[in-house]
Amino acid sequence: MGRTADSYLPDMQRSQNAPRASRLVTDPLIHDNQRVQPDQSSAPSRQNYAASAQSGNRASGGTDTRSLQPGTILRGGRYRLHELQERQEWLSGVYETMWIAQDAQRGASQVMICELVLPENSSLVMQSTLRTATMALTSVGRHPHIPTLWDAFSDRGRNFFVFEPIQGESLLNRMRRTGRAIAEQDVIECCLQMTEVLELLAQQSPPLVHGLIRPEHILVGRSGSQYILTNFSIILAGGATQFVSGIDRSRLSPYAAP
Image (cartoon, rainbow, N blue to C red):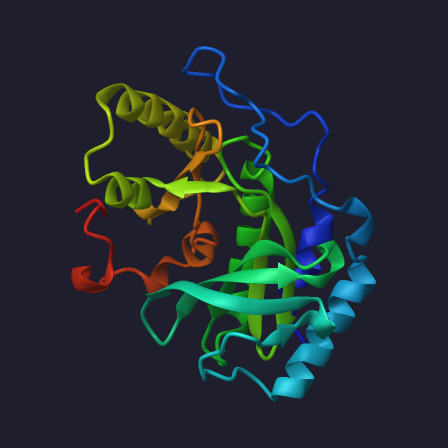
């Protein structure tokens, strides 16, 4: 059986002195208090990852395309899905769902989980996509304006990517709450920080495409001065453009490039 998402995460060890892109703003807050440090002691070994993937696929009997529900338990009781945040549908029955979830190994603290469903007959495509996405997201997750990839595993015939939670408010929610546009100086600061992120993504080999940049995916940290780009697409991070090319624009964000 081919390797799945959890088989690749142990290959990428997080550096203590991670490389960073050149800074485009003057001494912004590098590590805001809202970023939670990963619990390295709970990181499973390669063997545990593989065993989890095999048992998850055997139990499901292949890909179950039925939607998961809040309260679903994953990874042997570790994660509990709490709230569906959004769902992005691609071609050929492929879709990604972003969940707010709880991690029992971190005292039921919140995490973000991206659920990826791929066609059952695309095992070779799946292996390549998962390997590329895991390595790319682990690498860029070292940057202070990108959430860290904490875990990746297979369960119920589908794959899950667990990201650190970011305490903050999206640009969209801020505008809705205040009833007015973002202040010009804040827009400039946000754009400078996002330009830095895009510079980093373009420096990856191959370049990493986010593809879903929009106000609800840019969070303002508690300090009010740090902006985080969230909700990376696993499909796009994995380079599986065959599930995106030719898609009807009505299924994409209105902010997507033409």
